[in-house]
Image 1 (spheres, helix red, strand yellow):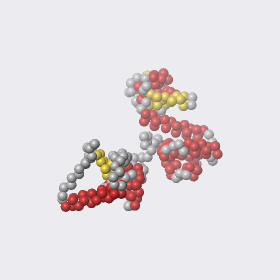
Image 2 (spheres, one colour):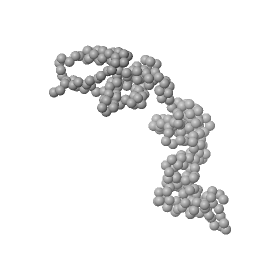
Image 3 (spheres, rainbow, N blue to C red):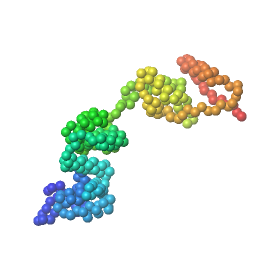
Image 4 (cartoon, rainbow, N blue to C red):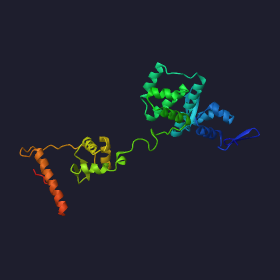
Amino acid sequence: MNKGLWRCRGVGFSRHGNLLATARRFVEEADAGLTATELEAQLGVVVKEPLLELVRRKQLEREKRGREYVYFSREPGRRREQQLRRASQEAEWEVGASPQPTELSEGWKAAIILFFSLLDERQRRLYAGLEAHRLGHGGDRQIADFLGLDVHTVARGRRELFGGQVEWGRIRQAGGGRKPAEKKNAAVIEQTAHLLEHETAGDPIQDLKWRRRATRKIAQQLRRLNIRGSASTVRRLLKQMGYSLRVNHKKLESGNKNSPPRRVRNRQFAYIERQRKQFLAQGNPIISVDAKKRK
């Protein structure tokens, strides 16, 4: 029995059932999809009409590649793997059928630079590997020097591309990239909370709290404490700490000409804060009263 197929007195049988089910199973399990010609060579029967019927039923997908249609799995992840492997095989066939270039032409260089600038990290690695493969012996070094990549990165991209090791849905492998600031320095959250001790406002009714200080200024103060982090990092940490990332807009004042200037109000709030700490240290209760003038 070969792949679930066997013959008895010239009649073919399949453990997968009828011809439609068998054709679908063979296409879905093929590493690079299958053309009708390739599938006929495996099954020994004409499969063009069954394949078209599977496409009409939306059980398979097909793509025009050269003079033939290639049939792929309907499942998106599996189909991408098959398409990538098919492209890799076609690239190998193209390289094997034509003389390998020994150097990059000026037009080729311009095309590579333009296309390379539009790709993400993983796509650049794979594309560099493809171009290195087309150049043949010494291609890894030549492409690495031309694109400013490490030669091992180019070689890795080539191995991933032609080895079918591409992980879809991710640019880097799990665990790749820089570690979060709080993992590099466990004190970053504690220091951030300390900096916001007197810069926190909130709404007790809606159970919200937010910071009065801009994230950029908080990041600058953390750098003075030898803790590296951008404003985006501070914003993420504040969200983890339960802060609402709202903008602190100053409300319009009532227009009372006798109201004290801002520097005087700041001294008043600083005095209140010192009194609060003193009362807490003595174990005395603290009562906050929000008094507003009625109109």
